[in-house]
Structures are given as structure tokens and as C-alpha cells.
Length: 422
Image (cartoon, rainbow, N blue to C red):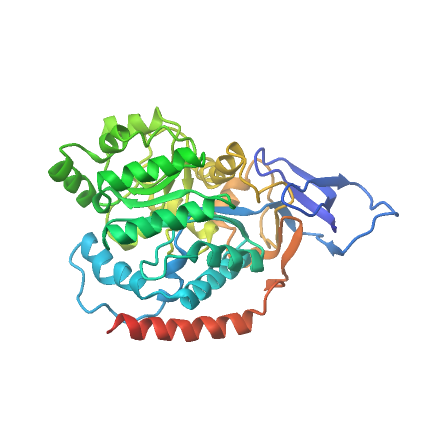
């Protein structure tokens, strides 16, 4: 067990501050216990002095793409994209087709390390590797387990590479769900036909899971649906019975009508906002008005820093949702509510982050959210405890050799870039 001494503990839900010692149990369902003084008879693995530090629940990412981890610094695509569809076609769909199993492993290890060092101990990921589908989710899961970051994975089922690939995606999903917590992934309405949606819904029902899908990230998704199915995207999803799963995660949700937003709000589905990715792809701004309060935050593969993501939501969204610091913080923490509501494992009380926050001004319960959006950054993450295990100590990952992993990642990145130019 780990013992944190002299903590300033912040309850992540109430933001109540208290000075305490914390005993941390190990395990997926481990708890924490508060003491004013360390009991003499405790058998401890590690004692960490947290005097002057803030301790709170670690972070969660509601929508990631580990397959993009090796994209950083790659050369420009063969054709400069003129719109969002071409961004997918010439960048991301080119990249994912080049991934092999070693590249997937490298991507997962790099992402898990980055998440851990940024205080993120739980990741919800949406994966695609059309030429290396079989066992891809297990490769990712094993890499995340090695680093010590909990996860909720899915494979991005799509018809865009042919119905045989869609069938392989369905098979990979079922194989994984037989022995792991996970979701049923679909790419987006404009790349999945009715038959594939029906099969995905069937899998979701069979394994009591949810659908993780991109919804109206760009206007193209809506226009394609109208042209090919005579309805809008949410209407199509509703017709297939997709919206009634409480574990659903609907990504982006930018180009929705008021009636579509209300349909989502009246369903048990969750929405995930990805502000920086939307800015990067120039597709517009998220507006959660009339969509209910089941909205969490993700990074969409842009990076693994949830504090940065939250600040972007606050700053870039000021003119669109006019959200104050308190509302942004609540949305930042919604992923935990999603995880706990559906009894997914890996985000119990024994997931903590220790922040060495050197504020020049007082910090307390009443002004914490102001510090959250204007002061706290990932540089303040000193220690991270995941499922009761110390996976980051003094900013260094303890579970894997980061130098060796990054050498492997660079090797795989160079290999990927060569393949993308062929």
C-alpha cells in the first residue's frame, strides 16, 4: 500500500479541501483512507511526503485515438486537403491503412506514457487499423496495462474499406468483448451501411455494451445521410435503435439541428466534446445547448493532456457556450460519472494525482476552478497513482523504460512515414 503524508486533499466532486494523510489500497476497486497520523502497524510499500502539494482524483479522457500517436512531425500528405473529407482521405485513412501490429503497440505505449505523465489514468479509445484488425484491441490493452493506465476500448467498424473489413471489425469487437470491458465502435454514418449498423447494434445488445461513434463532426456527415438515406444522422441512428443504449458515446456532435440535440438529450447516450481537434480540422465549434448535461471531454488523438483540453474548451468556447470555470470543470469530470454509472473498472477512489502547484495566490474551494482554467497545467503533475499503484513518480514513469519505449516508437514512426508515401 502507498501512504501520502501531509496532503492537501481536494474532493474532485465537491472541491472541499482538507489537510490529511491518505492510505491507498491497491486493486481495481481499491479505496482510500484518511488519517491524521500514520498508524504504527501499517505495512507500506511507499511513503510520499506531499507537504505543499495538492492531491485529487486523477483524470480521464473521454475520446482518444491511439492510432494517431506516431503522426507527430510526419511530412505533408501527397495532396493538400481541401475539406474535412479529404483530411480523412489523405491523412488519417492513409495512416491507419499503414499500421501493422508493431506500430499499434508503439502507438499504444506512447499514448499510455503520455496519458500517465499528464495525470490521466483512464482512457476511452476509438481504434482503427484496417490492415491489422485481428488482435489489435488486445495489443492496445496489453500496452496500457503494462504502463498502468486503465482503458475502455473499441474498434472502429466501417464499410469504407469493404464489407470484408467491416466483418473483421465486428469479429474483433466480439472477440474482445468476450473477456474485456469495451464498447462497439462505428466510424460515422457516412461510412457505415444499414446492414453493418444492424450487426453492430446486435453486438451491443448481446454484450450489454454501448456504441462509440463519430456524429456530425462535419456537415458532410449530414448531407451524405440526407442524400443516401433521406434523413438526418440522429434520425437514422434512432431508426436503427442505436440511441437507447446508456453506454453510448457520441463524438463531436457539431452539425446538429435543435430537434436532433433534443433527441440526444432525451436519450441515455453520452456526448464527448473535442474542441482542439475541431479547431485543427476547421469544422466549427461545439455548442452543448439543449443537448443535456451528459457531456464529457476528449482529445480525439490530438494529444493526451486533459488539462490543456479543458482550458481550450474554456477559452475557445467563450463566444459559443459562454461557459464559466465551474461549468468547464464539471464537464472535465463528467467522464468519471460515465465510467461509474456503467460500472466500468479502473477509476475507483485509489486513482490519484499529486500536483506540485506553485501558485503565487491563495487556492481554496471557492476559487479552485479559477486556478483550474488559468493556472493548473500538466507541468504540475508530480506523481500519479493508478489502481493503487505508483505509475509516475517525480514526473518519471515507473512501470516501463521510457527511453527504450520511445526509441521503439521512433523506429516505428519512421517505418510508418515511409509506408504512407508509397
